[in-house]
Length: 329
Image 1 (cartoon, helix red, strand yellow):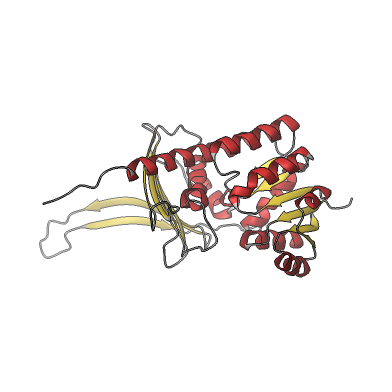
Image 2 (image 1 turned 135 degrees about the vertical axis):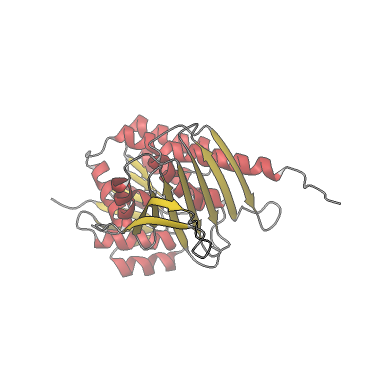
């Protein structure tokens, strides 16, 4: 059978990554690269075997499409292609706000067109291994997603970076309800997008999560720590490695000449089985969705909660920014 063609809309950093993965896939084949910057589109198309065009309508001639443009353009492009029945993988967030995101999801459901979102950490093999080694439920999760400054990105760090870890935490917590959100953010100037955001998500009596995202760092950092009553799983998402700690005992020796504190901890380094890079696994999932191997309604319903919580985090950040500073004398 002829492999389906894929359009990649957007020839920036993420569009380039998607184009490479499409060109390496054995299940799909390159279609068109769409970008208003025709020079950039032609360069990327030539590198990975696509055709180049500035016209979004050309994507409707392909069997499926990946939207990797600026967030504010997602809604118009998605609605245009959904109306033509084109399955979509939309980079996160799906749209600029919660209402627009819901419009896209509702249209996909109404027209029975497959859509998914670029929550690429769902396909990180090290998280699969982490879930397998946990013998009891998480009670505290700590994430850090820090990067150097990104010049091209204009939306808040909440929707750019933090939403990945919101999605990750919701999945690790097994879909438990977020009962409370507290958050704060920092912007370099009034009216500018937030470049740093920290938040706490509370899951009632089940536990909590502490998340930190920054575009003002000096290195790329992607870490997750999952605490259960018996285990600490320490995850490096970039290196895709996992270390597991289990405390056996701790004591305070009575001999004054000895150490004042001693702890014994079992350390394990589980083997992480890598079948492919996360972005390629995400593409395979998208193809499975289009082929009907993944339930469409369940997929769309699973895209909504991370956007809802990101919206709550953004609202909490705005409310704390309105607080008057304390004056000390």
